Amino acid sequence: MKARLNITIDDTLLSNIKVYAARNNKSVSELVEDYFRNISKPSKRKNILQLVDKLDTPSLEINDTNLKESFYLDQAKKYGF
Image 1 (cartoon, one colour):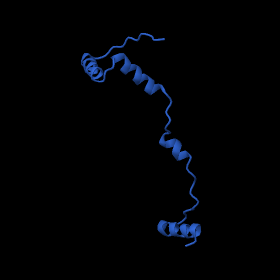
Image 2: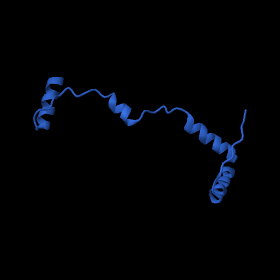
Image 3: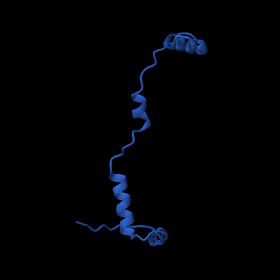
Image 4: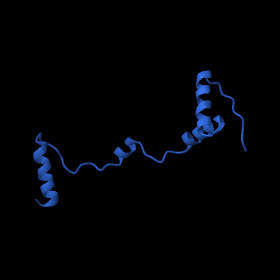
């Protein structure tokens, strides 16, 4: 079932939209409906903060300032170098 929607839009923008719709063989209503459908569906992608929260905490405790040496020692323990 379709419902009517009245919107107010700048005349110049509306003219540009009508040209765009004609070039793409769509109506302005189809463009609006497609846009609303697109922004209202749930995002499948996770934002960066959700991904960072899932990261494991580092196994290396850094108590000194020589990070390069600490890295190589950790790698040696991990991989037997």
